[in-house]
Amino acid sequence: MTCYEAFQAYALRSLGIGERLLPRGEISVCEQVVLIGSGMIWNVYFGALALLSGFFLATAVALGKNAASPWLRKPSEWFVFIFRGSPLFIQFFLAYFLFLSLKQQSGVFDPLTTAAAGALVVLFLNTAAYSGEIFYGALRTVPRGDLEAADAYGLSGWVKFRRITWPTMLRLGWPSYTNEAIFLFHATTLVFFSGFPARQQRGDALFYASYFADRTFNPFVPYPIVAGYFIILTLIVIGIFGLVNRRLNRHLAEGQRSRLRIRPQILR
Amino acid sequence: MFTYCEDPSALDTARWLSCYLTTGVHMRFYASFGTVLLLLAITAPVALAFGFLGAMASRSQLFPIRMIGKSYTSMVRGIPDIAFFLFFVIALDQALEWLRHQALCPDWTEPIRQGANFLVCADAKLPLSTAPQTVHEIYNFFLAIFTFAIVFGAFAANVLYGAMMAVPREQMETAEAYGMTRSQAFWRVMVPQMWIYALPGLSNLWMILIKATPLLFLLGVEDIVYWARELGGSKTPQFTDYPHPDWRLWYFLFLLVFYLLMTKASEVVLKRLTMRLSHGQATMGGEAMRRA
Image 1 (cartoon, chains in turn purple, orange):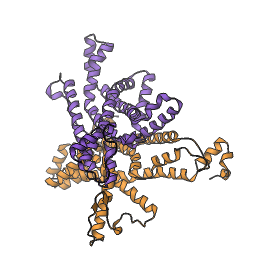
Image 2 (image 1 turned 120 degrees about the vertical axis):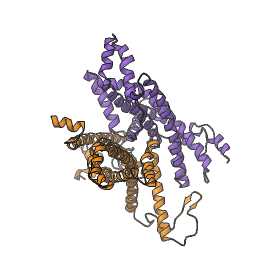
Image 3 (image 1 turned 180 degrees about the vertical axis):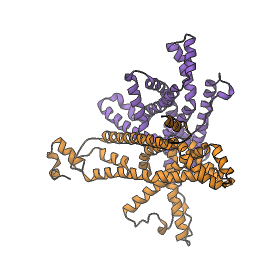
């Protein structure tokens, strides 16, 4: 099979389009590169959607944790503690079995037992907790002078939040949030190892890589391919978040801008 | 376990549960919590040692050593750690078998990689195919520990490198002014002072390590995740005295609570440790304590 044929057959294999059977026997490097790349579609899907949706819940959680009323504060604190204090791997398992038993109660929960929906829900809640904590930390460090200036200008309530508090919070939390985004994408590789079934072997990048490593008994080809893909993905994430960072910092003098610094910190 | 457990089907709920939760397989489930704690106890110091070596290498004056250190510390930044876990377990196994193969079977002429196979002579197999099951399990467990140590060593190297850099420059300059050599200054001035700067990062790392322990399951060790899946699955009366429907949800809920408790306990201990180490330090924490 030539590389072009491999691309035609397997480029969208992870979505169920194209050749159904996975390669057997002699597996060429081309096939591995194409199939693992096809699996990356899932990693991007999980990561991007969870980040987008988690962002809003994270803001709400940060505000809730910062609220004076215990009715808002306590649930937010527990939410953050439960999702940050336990391994994502266990959360996936727990959620999967929870959805399975819900499915027996009612057909409404049927889609949740698939990875595409169920795992996304877990990742959404998980990233909301981690980013919520980041935003909460940032919210606590919003300079008092900024808020006083807003008061002096007669801004209050929603307008003050929308135009002063929230952008400043984002600006202060953005470097850590970039980190969170990178490691969320890395965490998506856990999905298909944790109970959620890969129907007809439509899995993510690491799923295919471990399939190849088992089949060829040679880990030195598929895992470096995954590594390469993820380095590219990480660079893209840093690029996009860097653009946002520039926009958030655009009113500041050159020396005061916060730089993005990538620190490895998270394996959940 | 108890004498009344002879005929479980005739028992009331409380007694049934007390029998069910003390069966032989449940004892192995409880023992696997020991496996997890053992992993933590061995991995943490080994990873710290790896991290220390990595951080030292990144500060080396020799270019090749510095490059090795730098690439070790930066390897975890762009690539999912789970990929490393899956990779190292096979790669280490194959590397060990290959080394033994070279040493034990010098007159073997066939290639080791034949298509989709990795063939070494029977003497070089690790563990030997004649070895009992427990040896296989122990070998797997140690492969897993080593893998954890490599990956977390890279994280720790990052933290320790940052901590070494954070020791005030004046301290090192003073050491030089006293005529200490580079290594003397490193061991007598930098190392004793770096820990307080490393502590926040290391505490974070410890939390991450705790949360990484369920990945043992992926490395083929019979850990708590394995047993929770095994025991929780629905059981029919043909195969067991204790039939029950699918209880995996409850088993995993139990694991979740276990991890939450571990996290909470660690938080408390680490907070105390930070307090202790901050005493008399030229940091904000130390200063705050002095005034109090």
